[in-house]
Structure formats: C-alpha cells, structure tokens
Image (cartoon, rainbow, N blue to C red):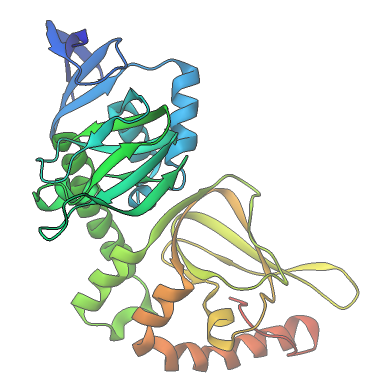
Length: 326
C-alpha cells in the first residue's frame, strides 16, 4: 500500500485556493507523491502530483486515445492531473474478467494479452493484444458492468490509471459541457437551420475541438479534404494562390462561420489555404461524420458553390477549381 499526503483545497470564485484540510489516503497505485483534492462546482477533483518528466510521458501516451479526442485543453489537463502511474510485471493480471471495474488504464509501455473465458471453455482464450499503446478498462466504468476480459502483462510495463469516479466525472462532465457549448454554436449557423434539434445534438457530439495560434496553417491549398470546420472563437483568413503564383486573400470567417465543406461536397482537393488570425478555437467535423450527419444540408451547400464561383470570378477573373472558398 502506498500512503500519500492529501491536501484538500477549496477553490473560490476568484480562482484562488485555500488549504482547508490535510490527511492521509492510499493512492491505489504505485506512483507515490502528493495527491491534491480540489473542490470545484462539480465535486472533488483529484490531482496526483507528477514530475515534468512523468507528465511529458503521460501526455505522449494519451495522444492517441479516442476517448480524449473531444476534450479541450483544460479538460485534458484535468485528465493528466487525475492519472497515476502503475508499474506491472510480466505475468501480472492488470484486470480480471468478472471483477468490478475500478480503474481505466492508458498504456505507456509493455505488451498485454486480452484473454476471454466462456462457460464452455476450461481456459481463457487469447482474443487480442496491446503492444506498447492503447487503453482499456473503460466499458466497465462507463456502463457499471463486470470486467469483460482479463488483461495480462506479457512483459514488464508501465500504465497510467484513473479511478472510476474521476473517469466518469471528467468524461460525463466534458460530454455535457461540450454538447451545450456546440449546440449553442451550431444554432448560429444559418446552413443548419434545416436540421432537427436531435440532429444538431448528434452533430454537436461528433465535433472535435481544435485550437490554433496566430498565423498557424489550418488548411493547405491542394491537400485532400478530411473534414470541415466551425469557428468558435477568433478569426481565420482564406487565401488562394493564383496562376501567377501570387497569394490573394479571398475572405475572412469569424465566430459562427464555417469553412472547408465544399471540398467535401465536390470531392476535390482543397482550392484554398486557411490561416488563423490570432488565436482561434475551432470545432472539426471529420468527413465520415459529415457524410452521415449533414445530408439534409447538402442541397444548400451545393447551391453555395455558384456564389463562391462568382466571388472567384470577381477576384481572379476565373471560376476554375472551386472547392472550398468561403
């Protein structure tokens, strides 16, 4: 058992923290170190202290985790704060089929077998493997089900773990915040007025937050189209290289606007580049979700092509190669 200091901090309206209690708590993991419990509007927030080196390793490990794709920068930091390191040894069962779920795990290193035993089988069967990447344990926490498989370490390895309560609080809270925020954003987009409320809710759930610093490239002329963008904060400028290899600004898009959709409609390469003007927060919709969710808006987007072509004619004297000019 690893015993660590617990400091309870109450966060006031001004963002300042006041230490109001001290105690001892078993961290439930192998990380050791300071654990801070912060009371906020949504309940206790657990912070497992980490060195800069540990935090960097954890940041790399969570980059590919699908569950965290929808989290914004602050929410990702909350996830990193809440996770603790667990070292495992060859042959160790990290989780066991049939047990109650206690933690969610992100793999930093090591190889792990996925073993499932059915009633008709005497021994568990190997159904898959994790090789130095991935995550597991989320289903039991999300749906209050027993563990569906045993995860056994084939080699020594390192995991990052998050307890059930924190996992549910962060992910459920972020899902609710994200839906409300993006629903409000989408209600300001004229193109989406034809969608029913439940369709906008599904669209809000599919959006992925992206943040860009000033002058950063978002879309590059000539690239294939992977999705479209809605602008949550800031401004972006849209430019195009003409036949004389000169860059000209076509237009700017501000909060509530969108861009990149027509390349998805026409299935052509990007006809323009898009750069942020100052810091910009965007909501990204990938091409698969676009095709699944925005069918009712397709006719309107196709009609917009003629308007954009006329804008090109005014600026360049040509309508050629229209795909995503705003």
